Image (cartoon, rainbow, N blue to C red; front, side):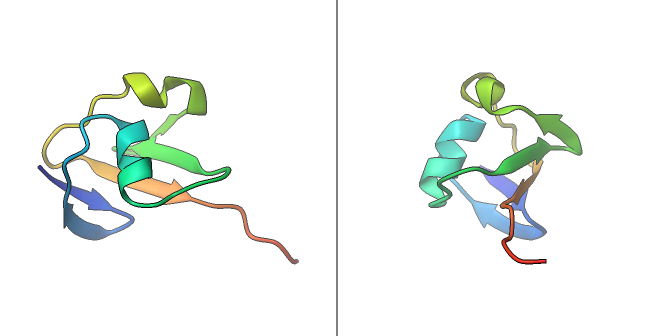
Length: 64
C-alpha cells in the first residue's frame, strides 16, 4: 500500500503501525502520529494502516 511517511510517499507491506516501524528500521523511543492523531506506543500493534495514511515518526534529539 502507499502511505506518506514523514512527508515522503512510500510503498510498504506493513499492515499495522508497529509493523511499519519495524519495516522502516525505526527502533528505540519514537513518537508516532497517523493522520495527525498521536498514537501511544501501547496502541501501535492495533493501529491498522490504510492506503494513503499520513504517518509521522519523530525521535528525540540530544543536545540543546
